[in-house]
Image (cartoon, rainbow, N blue to C red):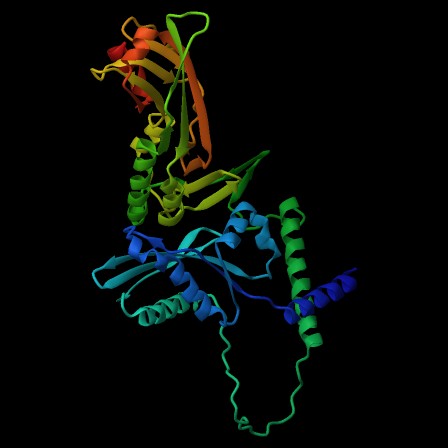
Length: 431
């Protein structure tokens, strides 16, 4: 039975040898202008053009741009169509101008794991772009050296000096295929052996750490298997906490449209009011997660992105566990219509909490609704932290009726996110 299999495997091996493809795919996107100085915005695309021109002839390297990266992010299965053994890297660049100098920071990210594999920084004169270009290209080539195969021998224009040697048996592709087949046979034998060990056909393996006790299988873990504090993770943990603090405190971008006031046709003393508000995550939130944190996993499904951070690279404090598990990071939007004295005349609270909906007020026009949905969610366990974010916009329209005299007193509208745990006391102080 193995002869046809060996023949097929040998043919596949020969085909793969003769049709080897590019081994490294490099995705270069526009560099980020840190200081937002408009006079040097052109460098963002300029650096990309420089690298594409200089690196286009590098053997075993295929250059890609923003569109290719987005295609991969939206459909990770595209990586499976690449030649076997290929590597995919994302080059992230940031730059800023300091007097006559331009400082460029480079990060090389492995797309398969989203881990940083190299980081460099260069400085050049703004008035000598050609020298800056050379430094940039040389640095990127050096960063890729470890991943691009380099021929050990370069073909010379001169004939090689040879020494007569006794004839030896020449190696052919067929001999190599036989070696491959023998190795496969050996691997299959090892596999059969391991399967026999599992079912008990060859007895117990002395190296197996599991101990059979009747019908119960016990694996001794010991204290070393439990998650513990690792001082080497302090740097990663500090970066993570800085980003998480920003995400939990103020992650949303809000657009408030001018409210519409219309007279109620059925009641001349009242007005119908509608106000449109658009909720979305701040643009830099996902970018910060992608660029600055060494996350251990990333899943993307359309507009939803899920980042994983595990215990091997981060130290999760008890305070973080408590904050996430008890939902202390969650916040509720409260929209206030303020009068001349900056006091709330109308209060809209967007919450699913039934107890809040039952509150009443004599001082302000109190409205409850539930149309807002959090665009960011945190989940934490003993080994890992997961951050889920959705990059969509939520358009919401709030409507209510109120007396004309109250409507005439409104001068401004404000929106504030109040922590869910503090919402009830906050409302009691106003109502």
